[in-house]
Image (cartoon, rainbow, N blue to C red; front, side, top):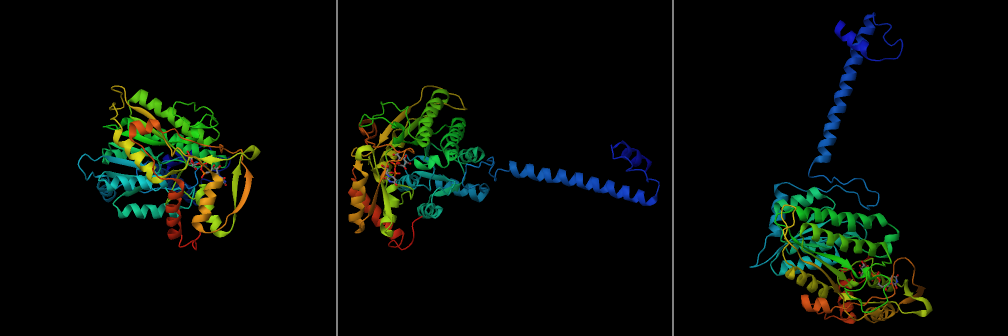
Length: 437
Ligand SMILES: O=C(O)[C@H]1O[C@H](OP(=O)(O)OP(=O)(O)OC[C@H]2O[C@@H](n3ccc(=O)[nH]c3=O)[C@H](O)[C@@H]2O)[C@H](O)[C@@H](O)[C@@H]1O
């Protein structure tokens, strides 16, 4: 006891705290205080250990709390059953097939590319964070579609490097089709952080894991026609300048192209960037004009049609999804192997950029006229000045490089493509009765 008392005496205390220590009551209280202090101390240690274990556990998301993310979630992954599903989905089932990790697999282009790869017998594993930038139930429906054809989508974020490393541990992917991104031109003014998070930090996180993988995969990824920014010379060629982006979205895609150059240069990663031109079609993105115009025309709501200064036409080189899928598969098939190993470059590797457009720009007002005919409803047109929030007046792709090197040859005009989209839209949203998100 005296030992204990002397120990207690060493603890700095408020004056008078131990004054009555001779009373037996005080003795008991002191003992009780000491036990309480010990109990509190060990509780803190125990709680600390639990927290350390939780944050280091491979099945939790180690992302820092980032206010720019719309859906902060913890994803569950890992375990023998999960690994089995991953392996089975990524298993190549055709002679000379490839095994591809498709990021953004529950997205519009990701779903179509994953399905096409699976159809020809390639191994496909999806990865998607199912964020709520647009109605997540549409992403879940795409997931269900892929699931039926044997494609498993792992739920997780490309910024989760522990998850990415695990995926490469389980499967030796030959290719990565990187389509996960924060898309949309106008939303960048609302939530700039999400563009940096997905299109820059996420890309770097993915390339870091790819560079260390053995073997390193070849990577094909989605850039954007928006990198041509304020250029006025048409059609846009890959040789043209891309240093005057009109939106943060475009700037992050341009940054992605420079980051790709760096990883190719330092680590020998084979990298192909595809500049998509306003991709549309069934299972598309509800944030895109053709999609919400359809929804709002059916609802009888007015639609804002942008017009440039002096009644200038705003036009897009709208490209149908099936053409884009062919371009993506051709890019994967012509991708050479990465040359590095163990994080070290062994020789020069392929670095490519292609325009994937349709080469026939259509004014937005014509897009609306086609929709009116297909929906058999007159649109309430609200002609509005092109806002200064990232939109450019026109896009037009020169696709001769993709034609020459990928055999890319788009074959669907806007009228035909929109017909397929409208058919899908009406059946998916139950004849327009169910509201589109
Ligand atoms: O080509 C690309 O790289 C980009 O294509 C689209 O961007 P955008 O062409 O702006 O597509 P929409 O937002 O669907 O707009 C299509 C056209 O409709 C016009 N628009 C849009 C919205 C609106 O309310 N009214 C309107 O007239 C736009 O100015 C544009 O000319 C995608 O949203 C981007 O993610 C993609 O990277």
